[in-house]
Length: 169
Image 1 (cartoon, rainbow, N blue to C red):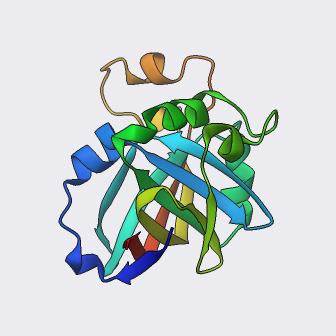
Image 2: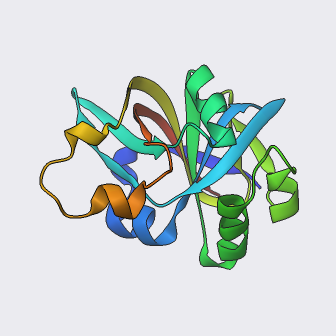
């Protein structure tokens, strides 16, 4: 598959559908060593006069180390025909299998990072900021801590500049 690099201003997307309903594959690492995971939490917007993507990764996820230790990562958005691949990548660990291969995804090198040939859109992101979500920072009692964490570790938040965008040609 070949990609065309575009300006972000050319995108006509609904970020709520793109992230929350379509989901994304967050991929960290290099073409020689990478891991991907499915994510449905995140934001697209502007911060510090930069176009940014914010994502959240639990430290016990295999992808965490790849994103944490690298300068960049990608967010790949695939069509509905890849829903099973997204489910697979969200429910299996790269510690136990080659998720991309087993999900039928073909790695593609984009600006030194890894996306997937099957993607309709790939955002290449350069990390700018990270911090840990904390239990004591929740405001009010809407049951979010209990519903989303319980015994699970809190996510780490990454704010990354979207340095390039690629669409299928």
